[in-house]
Image (cartoon, rainbow, N blue to C red; front, side, top):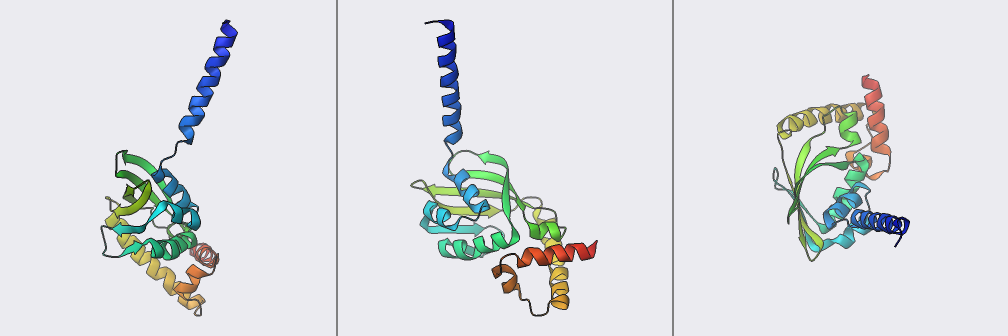
Length: 186
């Protein structure tokens, strides 16, 4: 073999291995991708029928149906995204440190909280997600309560016929009111 042929073969092998390595997303990565883009049908396919979303700081949890119908809808209304800051554990269950970003927090001027998210799988599907607090929780919890109350009072004063349910169900309405509120506060 000539040097040129060996070099070309090596480059082709390197490109192939790189592409193959990048295309091997695991189920946790896919979960965040679908969640951050609000892909209900895609999420439904990767969750087990007995799926649960639990939070360590409250007794409220979501089953598969309420996760797909309520949690996902509210996340989309908030333009919520989980930004992975760190993979804490690659082993099952996978653990992540994430930043919870949303227009809701941005326009209410509340610092984005961080959460520890643990993803449990069964038969290559997600069967449980646990959201745990970090050191940002106390400050976040206090700030969001105050900011939310001020915003809701502003909303009632300026739009008395708009309910919280309408904000979440009418696409784009929450973002519109949040932007208006933020502009007014400048």
